[in-house]
Image (tube, rainbow, N blue to C red; front, side):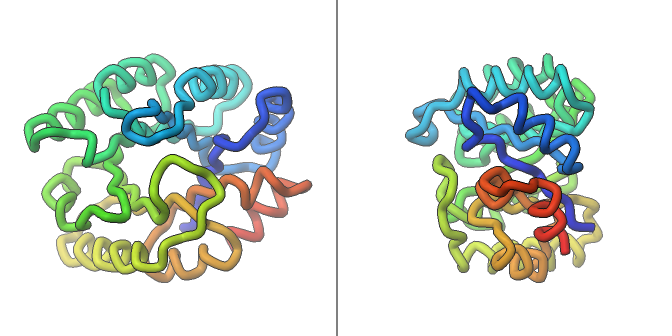
Length: 219
């Protein structure tokens, strides 16, 4: 089933409540919260995403999909656990050891929140295989993390395909999410590669009719 996680990264602060209500009415499957610390990626969205996530929690029951692009993973897990999001995803590249990865997985799950691990375009998909049985989602970045509105890197879809084949071969129940450059043209390719959750920002929030934009992506 195709699900859409709408990134609120490019939503203007003065319009945030109007946009969030609009996305609620348009039945986005998730609100995607891009937490960036200005270290792991150049951009810093810490304050903005904190404000947006709190605002969404107050007005909506739609699940929150938190994507941590940060160096201090534990600090931000602690911050977002309080909001009880549906899922918290951290980057494999932000961890220093296998023990650390497993510690974060266990810690998030102990708080009754789903766990995702994300990999950048340059990271081999095989690096995540050993963790797949213990997590709920693998997020494959289809652009370099840090900026909205980039073009999808075609080679990343080969990773999605490889991941999907591995999951099916090993009978693992897990979602594959893709993030970056998703629009009406690229979503079909990403879906064919094996993804089932699609992060889209500009392809939705830049449109007049969010519902129509989401339906168009899904169909």
